Amino acid sequence: MKLLFVCLGNICRSPSAENIMNHLIHQAGLENKIQCDSAGTSSYHIGSAPDLRMNVAAKLRGIELVGHARQFTKADFEEFDLILAMDRENHENICALDRSGQYRHKVRLMCDFCTRHTLKEVPDPYYGGDEGFNQVIDLLFDACDGLLNAELLNNAI
Ligand code: 4NP
Image 1: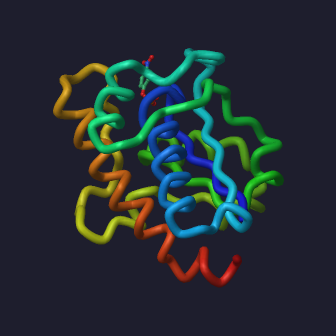
Image 2: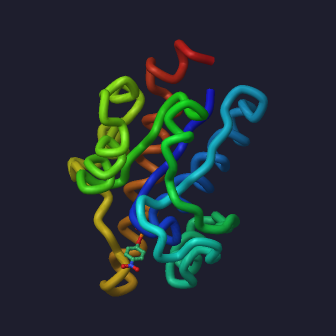
């Protein structure tokens, strides 16, 4: 099962989702069943490491952010089983690359998997303060946990 987490820049939210999910997958001993990657809909930060402010917030929760930003491409629709958009704009931009709609069933909003939080999108923390980054990590722990326990995923592995 291959999961792709997608945000705008691939330096804050989606690398956090990828690394938190990998942490939970490791804890569950499912490394040989589930693989994760992340990408951005924009080309703004291609090649960049995760944002330092995001790294600080992740470290407070025991997560080290690794990886470098890349842009989402049409080839990702074939490569991945499930594509998780952080917000509705990411979702729209991903679906805009799938003109025929043949991959629409693979694209979901990350917050659909939250069980504790009621927010429908992972807010973009880029232009805000520390609290926004901490909120992203908290939301993503909830969503990743929900995803790991989701029927959709467990029926596929
Ligand atoms: P991300 O955050 O989509 O969670 O990686 C952002 C990163 C960069 C920008 C916006 C959001 N930017 O405008 O450069």
